[in-house]
Length: 471
Image: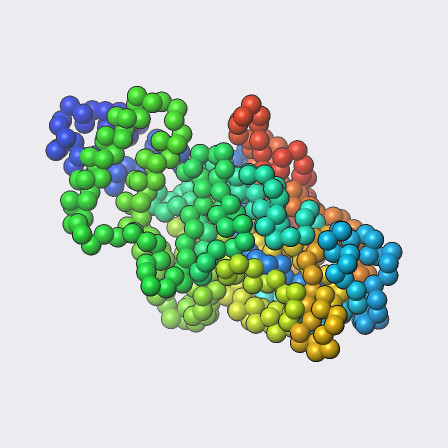
């Protein structure tokens, strides 16, 4: 298409009349490389290790000391009251809700050549220990779900800010013309803070995440994706005419990003009618692959994530379920067992699948929630340990990464003996974001967007790249 851009072609169609013009415009939608698209692939600031991200979000906050941060020292303190000197260091909302120390009821063992210690909750993931970079010194800001989710996704616990997926899409564009560049997968329902977790905020709307309920009941996975009331050819002509008129409207209103986003969304929706039904259809995978992931909501989601990643989607986020399933204020023993069982095999299958396809080296996989949990019993009045739980905690929790340019088989940072504060190498959420952007080829201080008289960035005025974990 060189100098004769898609826009100039559309302008030329005005002279041909609406009938032929609509038909020709529809062909442009189907066959062009869309050089005027705001999502055209772009080069980052420097050579990247990762081309895409799969974010496994354990919403609700998994307990770090029961999963990836062993604390054998707690067994000596088990059943004892938390010292007042330690309580004073906790956030005000937590001080009156913690009391008796509760050592992890789950056993840990060393795995892989690295000897990385992982809980019995994750026997399948443990087989991939040498791929994992476990950050045990994560810190956030507010020990509550909505602000915690917004902090982890958008870099601010309160104010409306673009999500990290939107920033990645804004910076890199997408390699897929027929699928959204940023997809959010959930079996059903919505997480806490809902669509604000994948908002584009003040970035153009074209960079917002596309939320898909993959286990939706009583309807299509993507509502209204296909039409039974109109033939494909007729719809193609109808859309071509609509977009032709949209372009004329746009030419008289240059610089309107909202209009650009709407026009692009209509074009994408048309192309998705074929591409999306294929990408989300995991039954096209060999039976052995489906069995490896598990024919469960979480298993299907992670298999879809791999299919989307190999089709050029930049940022795929997989929530464990609606609301905050990992929020175990009570019944942590049975709940964490169940949730880990639901996710362990699919996560291991994803890591294995990506490696076998040669994709793990340029796919950054991130696991974690918006917070961790305390090392004390919250429901101290209950005598049955099966009913005990742990409270929210943001001053020392765990996130792990794999692939995409991070070192495998290592842990970074550590929490104190009570697992309630960071003892070495703290990593704030801003640092995590800066590191993720670095792996994607961006200087987080230079990836900015001018809005309301100020240059904004994902990390605001904070953040440092955690260089010790880079391969």
